[in-house]
Length: 226
Image 1 (tube, helix red, strand yellow):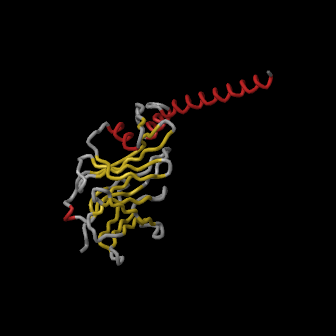
Image 2 (cartoon, rainbow, N blue to C red):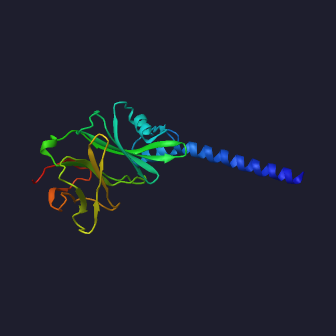
Image 3 (cartoon, rainbow, N blue to C red):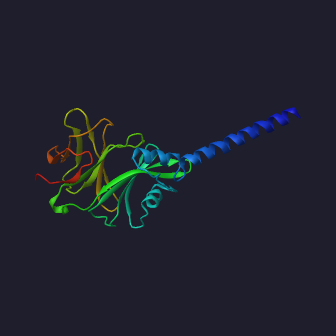
């Protein structure tokens, strides 16, 4: 009898601990919960964001952005989260591009941060376009990051390097989406700032496009030197 009672007490303690843990997780991750308050404070907002939970990275973005018109171009797993590349215009052959970072929680996927740019120069006039997404203090993200779309097929390699520290550079990852669009992105060190340089090179290593970026949230297009 004592052994049975002891096991019953142990099981009750474990169950109670699980319930308490779930409640704490829910209070932290629920829309308007502790994580949203922390995010709102980091952004300097007076009101607390109400960030919904989604069953997938795409759904988490759709719910937060309250948009049914976006088209996902690519999803990239990053640590315990994912980067969702999308276009809001529905165009899959060029124009605008947006990146959203969502993280995986025990209760689902939750939007964290993102940015995007609108249509720029005509593809025939530009070799590539770009945008930089800075980090957010006190919020865990894979940023800072530079991303964009490759428009000149002669470019096969993209390098992002700091101007003040020549050895501090990153090679971008190039991805050809199902739509045929080639997007690229490169993570920067947390300490990276401006100025930095973006170089687009051909197979032989010749520079096709280059630009020095001086804006921490800069975006634009880069012309071809050909």
